Image (cartoon, rainbow, N blue to C red; front, side):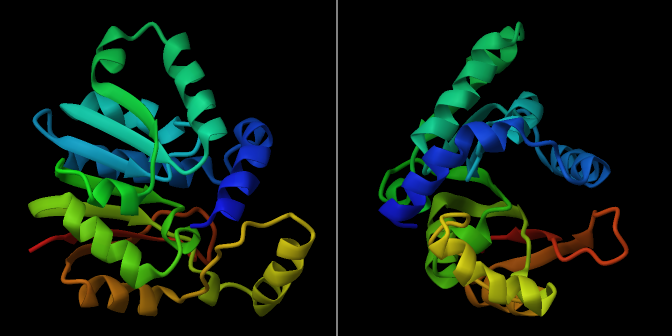
Length: 215
């Protein structure tokens, strides 16, 4: 991710926060399955947390939950949401912070689970990002993701992305890969694929939910 991406998401934060969830039923299935894999002793890291919607739902299932994003404006909105809740147990275990996977990988903290929802296609070179995620995990830790695979979408969408960048309607970092190539990238990074599911409500779901385990 670049400075350009940071600026894009800062500018988009309020509009993003006000946008409705496109597939609420699919999101609920993802949250339910992810919650089943977290336990109260887990230290959890979420990458690309946006405005904190998922973190606020899942943090109660973990011992500690650090939710991060490249955008300071996204983090500010997430912190506003957290401050507005009356759940003290969330405030005691959930922290929002502006940070990237690369920055976090240079710190000593390691996690039982790393989450990345609608993240990998926006985070830059997948092999580099996955290497950082593996570094961030404890041995046998879980990487849980749900990723829009642009390579599986209508070709018109792929062709439109460069034009959207020029118009300021898309971030600089949008990586086009298929679900098959994503699975290969995850395995090449040393992970074991435990689950590969589709949670979407539409007939064609281009957002695989993948659970992978570190060595």
